[in-house]
Length: 226
Length: 196
Image 1 (cartoon, rainbow over the protein chains, first blue to last red):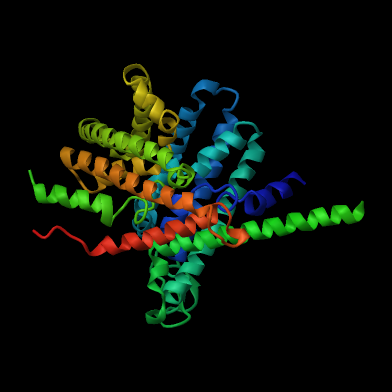
Image 2 (cartoon, rainbow over the protein chains, first blue to last red; image 1 turned 180 degrees about the horizontal axis):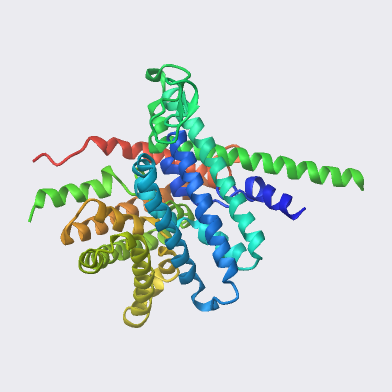
């Protein structure tokens, strides 16, 4: 029951990007190809889950006055681990994301979840929260990537889907992606910063519209029942 | 001392590679405290100050502690601690020494710790192998770029109250679209360079 609610919260009703409006910088900056989006999403899921577990386990030991500093140290530790692992095993991703991997340290989603959830809940619940909130973030990243990549280059899955050598998923940034329409007809502007702002604006607007509609429906149902 | 390079860094940080509009660093405070022009200007000033100082201190830490001891892999950790401590110290110092500035910047200072523009500028300084003066110049001018962006944005946002847009775009979405259009305007600077 609770798991179900956490799942729904993370992905939809309390989506970190679309509803809580956290973690904007990376969402806007790196969502130009599916490879970047999925890579960033997975990194954040791992870091968020690990941080939530550690902070939840330590929640009774951490003194209240310096808790933020301790959170930051824990987060920076895990970010460094992921950064080094990526550099060693997926250098293409590390290069594509550049400075935004170390910048996960100041991604408000992670410190926000530590403060708002992990500091008050059990280890199991915090781990689940990390996974679901991370998934919600990844979902938005992927949506942004798909929209921007399609409009800018007419492609899908750049860097991840290798069509030339049979149809398979690769994770080293060499896949060419599926070309849906020729790249020269794409609106290059969508791959530039402008496109990021516009796409995210429209996505959040859509989310607000849907949430308002569902709230309206609920209140109508209530009235009908009364 | 290479003046042309310094000018190049300045021009890049303020206009061409503006931290907000082309590098996407510092979007959270950019969106969060841009409802009024004067608070936006206060935030911008605080950011210039902290970015300049952080660039200087982190350069020293990197050169004489991390590199000297072969601990570069602790960079992220060291930088964020330096920034957090720095912000705390600046806050305490200003409170005692320059209370008028403190009350002007007051609430924005603690927020700066989680401003990714600050950590971003420090990481970029290291990545680009800037020397001490170049680092400080990049930090300060990056902050000026932030100030220009946030003040422009806030003054547009104040006018948005009188605009008529679809209800779904209320609040954040319309602000993002506005920022997008501003970014489009800033793209016009992308061809500029120092002519010598």
